[in-house]
Length: 128
Image (tube, rainbow, N blue to C red):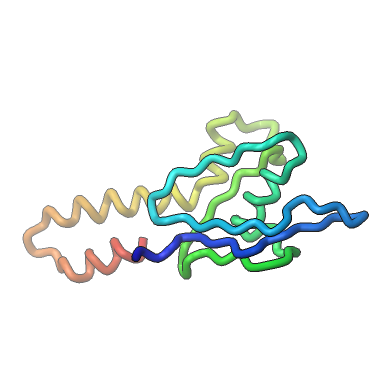
């Protein structure tokens, strides 16, 4: 069975004054899973995403990402630079992802060199 990229086990979140936003939430995602988070306003959707991103750690239960996985998070109401357009704000927030994608493209091009160290390329590809 494939390893999960993220698991929540019996997660709960309580905010003052003893208001339960989340209670006994368990879920797991396989690599490549496409997910959607649906619910009424105030039901805890943003809280679940903050927990998954590691931003909110004051929880009951366990939230465990796969080791060495990188999780990006774009807040629902981010603090934006008024001098930047929407595209610039997204690119700034996802800069690491764009950098990794660029490195992967360069790596794929290097596979075309017959003298390339294919083992080293494969290791770097796995790391990215």
